[in-house]
Image (cartoon, rainbow, N blue to C red):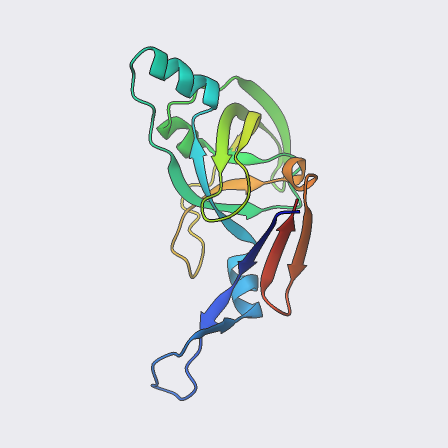
Length: 170
């Protein structure tokens, strides 16, 4: 069973004014940052193949962070990222949000996860969401996707606040 551990650390100085030492597990960092993992959002494989067949360039994947969102029924992609990749919406869907019911565009895309054993995931339907300006605190990287329960249903996930780790087993 492949396993991916995601550790959340903080550099800690032992004396005021001292240079921080090696990183140590930080439950506060996990609370501040949230359960995130690095993601590359790419055009879906059929679109990439079609572009190659026409001798057209395949857009460069967009790198950022995906928030593991147990409150999201379906995974989502930033509208801005989908537009940057030139992915056209395939329809709209009604989505219940904290702000009430909203219509959101639906996209197809591919997520890959560099630096770990997670296999790429092709999505026929991803909800487009406005993640504009969401930069993950402490990491300085943009939030570009949400991993919802549609994907989490494939894993065992352990959120261990005491050791500041997230473990995904699949």
